[in-house]
Length: 360
Image (tube, rainbow, N blue to C red; front, side, top):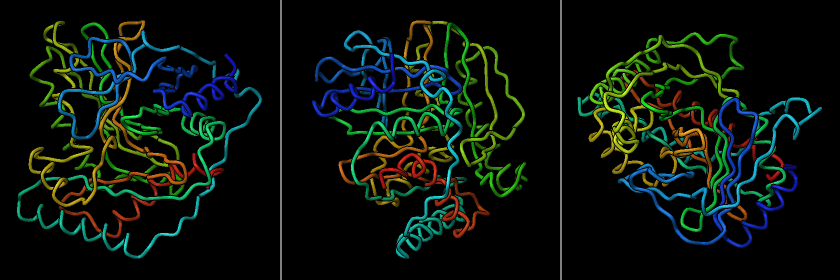
């Protein structure tokens, strides 16, 4: 189907306050759309439905689901949709940042460092929410930019009356399962690609990456018969680069449920920290806002190929009529520097600002 027609239907669906989701898998050549035909709130606990789920950071065993069976399903070939269109050349979006925003985030990082120095926490991920005024919501601008700017990411636009309108381009796989096999990744460390062709990863970044990898591997040992861990390598996500390690394997029991593996992995050290309880408590007590669906997860369960693909909800934003809320964060370890951590969040803001640019 023509992308222009899909975007018109998306706009109409949004006006009617009916749930929908538009999404494209990393390096995928197709964009898929589910337009739910009613306003019923469907949920999933066992992940035995077929559809798209979205879970908050504080996931407690139930997610909102937009089911295939209750939706009109549309799709569009991306190569045809953007035929003869060159790459979008991103330009840095200059944004006024109030001094107090910087001071508050650096104060939060300093608090985290004190907790780490007291040996209460090994690593904690702290984040912030940035409000950005926009002229209006325009799917005809938003969606093509999202799809074209970040082909290596899972890109989505999700709306549900219960959650509001969310949009993201996440580089991080939480879990892909098919049959008895699974794939996940450990992602940590951030550098601006513009700074250098091949990032020179520091001991701090390599250590942070290893912590994430070790914790995830240990969690998966309980449910796997075979576990393979790759060497870390550079993964590009838009204008940013991360350290990535791939973790693959086979489940001990093919009856192991998707919920069991998801519960073992979420939240990962890449979005929360270690030890898990202490890091979570620090976040809840000190961040000063509700993450909602940022650092939760989103993706498809039991698609037509009996495959499930869940992604960590990073590089995302929540949209309202005249404003967008952008979510960014970073992992704090013993040798983190508050000024550097602030700059990292500023760089991460650019991912969604590039998508919003025509609406600013």
